[in-house]
Length: 288
Length: 275
Image 1 (cartoon, helix red, strand yellow):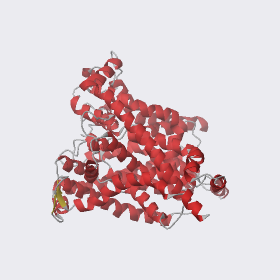
Image 2: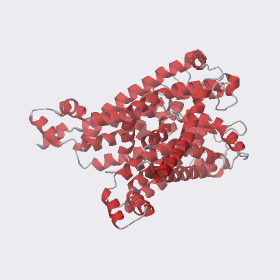
Image 3: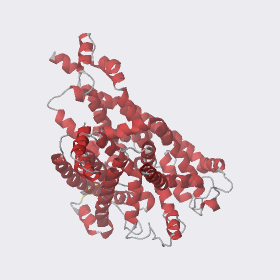
Image 4: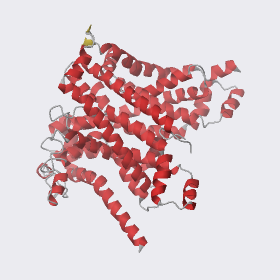
């Protein structure tokens, strides 16, 4: 039977996907570690040690990407957790309009990031834009959302949350709906309030959902490129550059070794933050 | 009284959601129908003399019908990537779930790495260049497949666990080999996940901007997201055309959303919430 088993579930089935994955994903990933130590123009390379990495941390215009990426990932993922959870609680209650609301909040996740980036850049125009026009009606002079170096990164992060909160929401809805009714009944018998229900049942028991939302949006935030590139191109100056946008700039400039070092740094950041985060959250998970 | 008040709150909530999530889309739509001068005001007024059709035609004709070519390219990219993705990932998921051996943890690790590791851009170009596929549609298809592989295999593998092994055993006793078992019996049973992956991947690949930007540059091979990016610098004074373009390329995902809303949500939550 063992021979039949091995013949039926032959490893040949893995071969087509395996070849593509090995060639297009694993080979570049592994070779990136080598090329990040070189000066490189695709055909010729010259070993230069840690020079690329040193450059990444010494040059102000490159080092800022490191900080911005962390800020961006932390801000977007924490806002998605909070808003996703609150909206999730709201849209699993007895609202009549919950299906409509879920759909309208979810739809932006399916729309092109470039389209949304362009539309919001115009809405955030300092004088003509909708947002500041609306603010001026109530007598507030709105800031230059994308032109102010202190604000621009957060403005883009806000658009990221607007576009992505729908995914957090549907994950939370699935998580909250999977909590067994018994818990709510027990709470009712003990005379608990709505506040107790939220803090003592929903928050702890939807932890698997929280876990997924944090991991998905945190990794997504660290790798984010297209939105920042459409909205600010890293500007004004270098103030909103993320690691991913720096990689693109260095690639355009023909600094392939430097761009690859950026990729390796991004890899290390993701591995150093996401993996421990994942392990930590796995330990804290409770069984339903 | 209480009911009236709760209804009031709900109406307020709906109005707020419409304001926050509806207005950006309304903004895109009205501006796609204005003339250049009116669109430069960036307001929400309905166009005084709507010219949606004219704008759409102008955008379509720009740069020698670039947008139409882009639609053909994006459709081909999406279609071929999905066919390859579905076939190869279903095969892999089938064996990975059924055959547990010493190599299993290694495969698990490789799939998980693919979900987390950001793809190394320039080395990928180097590999594609080496096999002569850089700047080709086939090369980009391979990239989309390689990047979509971990998620799709995971979905297939999880679903395979719900297909009873007795089905395999009965087929094997009847003399079915692995290939026939997979294509005739298993693949049809995987249909629900296949549908999920088709819908999710088509939205992802159709909306993909970063990979075409790196791996398929050049005006001949342009994809829809890149037209928008190119027109962004060309139409700096003609926002109406930019928005007409946005309107056009949002239609395919919108149709998918109308038909497969439930399936998309199911797919997005399937991989992330543990049972």
